[in-house]
Image (cartoon, rainbow, N blue to C red; front, side, top):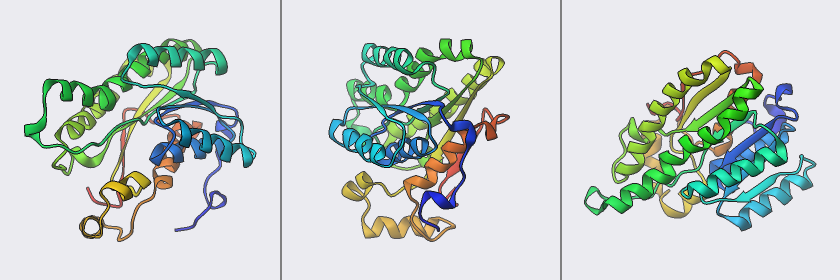
Length: 259
């Protein structure tokens, strides 16, 4: 696989467009932010990880990308979410693209789940996606366009074990996507989902990506190599760009042929 943006598509329609990414400081989110910034988009992103967020903003500025707008935001706090969304609207105007990326794939057994743990997991993995959409839809309607990309996962399709709340939420994201695509289609707002497979992020390597797990993944994938965050980000660029103007209500899998 070629390395470096020069080998991949440039989308003129993304030049100067406003893009908002949740959970954009690390992992797949960091790659999404970087790819849009390198397209010349005006990128705002939310996270709770201030140090990596600032490092990312500085690194992209050094590359000559447009300045990033980072806001510390706990998306499980709906008042903070709405306030941060309003600040983006005031600073940048209506987002042309919303990428609902933030999530937490924490591991747990079914026996460990309490009502409070359930609520916490749904708050970060599902609820905030809906309320981010709700916060931005009025301005998108007024603009007469928008592309919303909700991050799901193949975990509920495998199905993965040891993370029942995450898989439940990620299945629900597909339902949310399909419903909102039809709700918002008359306003020319597109809504799609992206379902990554086993993507090698720093968090995955630090916490779970053992040689044994890698061997299991590669045995199940049709492509016998590890998948990188950039391979997810490049699909999201396409879904944000006007090249995908007729595409909505769809779920795209990036898993090397696992499913």
